[in-house]
Length: 86
Image (cartoon, rainbow, N blue to C red; front, side):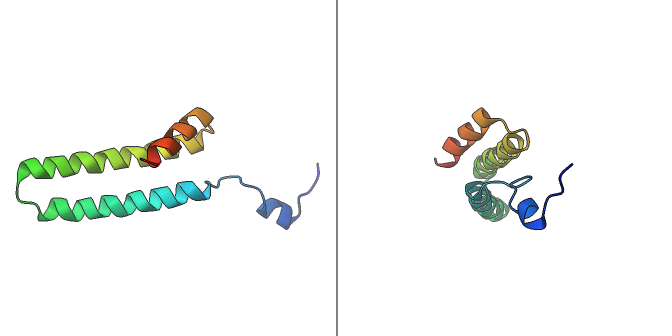
């Protein structure tokens, strides 16, 4: 068994998401928080439901990214990458 130096260990990508994933998830989180404020301030139940629907869609994107990158599923990763650009 070969012992790895710290620099070699630190350079591995194990457990790390690509930068684009971090940026996309950060942007989606900001949108979700904005929608949350809009939902709280909206009096019309129909408009609230529309905002909740948008919020749920964004949450599903984050879940898909989490599943895709935890399973190393390249097809799902590429699909989520294209969806995140929309």
